[in-house]
Length: 213
Image 1 (tube, helix red, strand yellow):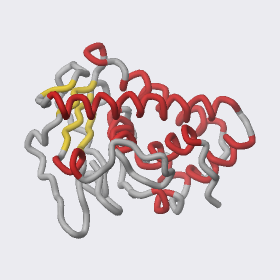
Image 2 (cartoon, helix red, strand yellow; image 1 turned 135 degrees about the vertical axis):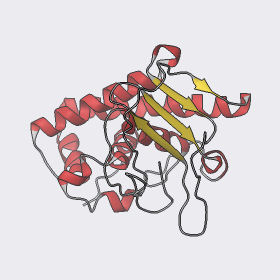
Image 3 (cartoon, rainbow, N blue to C red; image 1 turned 180 degrees about the vertical axis):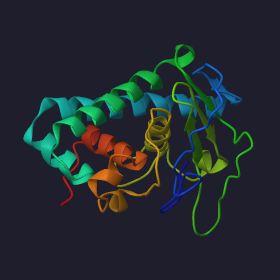
Image 4 (cartoon, rainbow, N blue to C red; image 1 turned 180 degrees about the horizontal axis):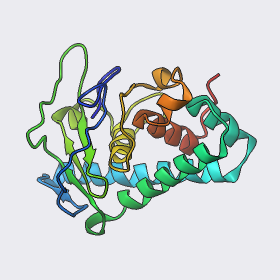
């Protein structure tokens, strides 16, 4: 789930996702999509996979840039934390390209969620998991108020939003903080459970962005 500026989850603290007890249907293909919106999410997932893999590869490279970028987002140089983040990102990269062979249902429609969209915040989607299977439901604003892709490191686009939601389906859920600048203010414990941190770290790795101090 994601809000325009900051917040919620569990249930809704800025973009978080809620873990549900009942099993979700096994599937990873797109559902209830027009041809245009299916193409938009397909493109977003393709880009998200590249970003996530870039993030994982950078972490495993052990380069100075990798260390500095990881520290800037996650506020730690702990090897276990790096291994965990890289592993989550690799799962996202695999899932994003899995299509019908994956375990995430990705809907182009809200499917019953209340898509808040007003002057204070905008909700783009809602991701959830039962620990194995996942589901992402998409709000209209995802398609109409955010660019499909932006080469600007600080800009939220559809691909970065999709990566954020995919992180929820891989177990990253907790009270959330949204926005490139805001995630840099989190401590390590919060950042490691914040899907937005994974999303913008991956985008920064993909674009070779300057490390924020």
